[in-house]
Amino acid sequence: MKAKLGPAHPYTLVCTGSLGNAYQAAGKLDKALPYYKEAMEKLKAKLGPYHPYTLTSSNNLASVYVANRDFEKALPLMEQTLEKQKAKCQGAPKTGHQWAR
Image (cartoon, rainbow, N blue to C red; front, side, top):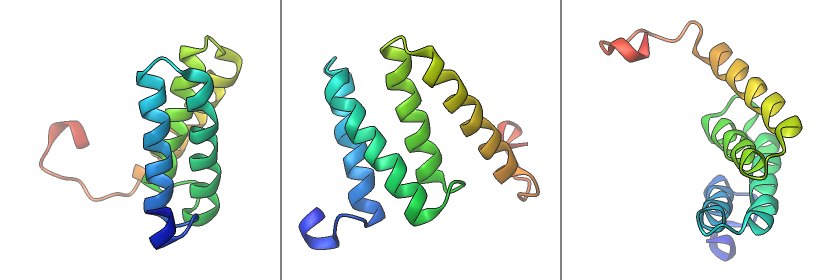
């Protein structure tokens, strides 16, 4: 994907984050962390801090911090991600789903 779309394409960066997911699932947190960081930083630069891909990558990075028991990094990142998600949802059209209101 990187060779075809380039290293900064959002799909490439989502795949980068997915590699982090695989390493985290395999219990290799030290290998997951750089992929999560790279995906989040580049997605934020490319798409902005409120884009769903950026918010997902921020949450993924926070999850590896939690798995590493690094709560000093995990909690602020999770709180920031939640606040950005709330801000993004304000003014969004209501749907027929109860959970989306």
